[in-house]
Amino acid sequence: MTTAAVVAYYSQENKVRISYAGHPPVLYWRAKDKAWSYARPPRRKGQSDGFPLNIPLAVDLDTSYGQLTISMISGDRLFVYTDGIIDAPNPEGESFGLGRLKDVLDANAGTPLSGLKSAVLKTLNQYTEKEHTHDDVTMIAMEIC
Image (cartoon, rainbow, N blue to C red; front, side, top):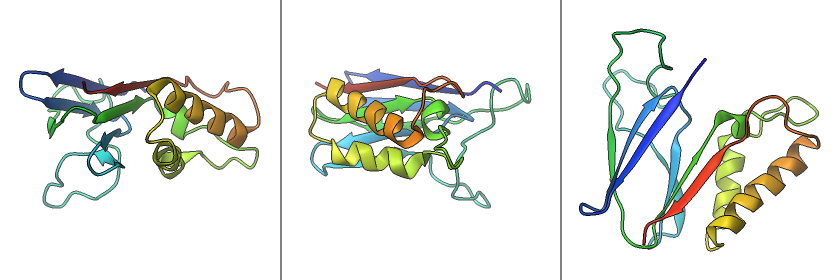
């Protein structure tokens, strides 16, 4: 199964546009609020409040993917990652999950981006207690200047 998140920052507009195809939600941090939030489109009538957003790529050729726009200012951050992070199991088989990922990001909100990514990896390694062989573990952290 292939998922995707397309994230584009438009500096002249100070906006980020995100489209999902079955991918876990991007997290964004507002410098003024000092809190991480899930970037998810507004719910449509009859739609559940859960993830995933849209369906994965190539499942249905007629799928139309929506776009979410978020205004950003200097100091705001984005965190994009693969499901290998949230799906990583501990020895009992329980997944790391979105909540734990958000907790790590919240606990390290003021950390430089390299430290933020290191904190996620350290916490993930402690949680799983082993090498990550179940899936890829990829993340991108960026800050608006």
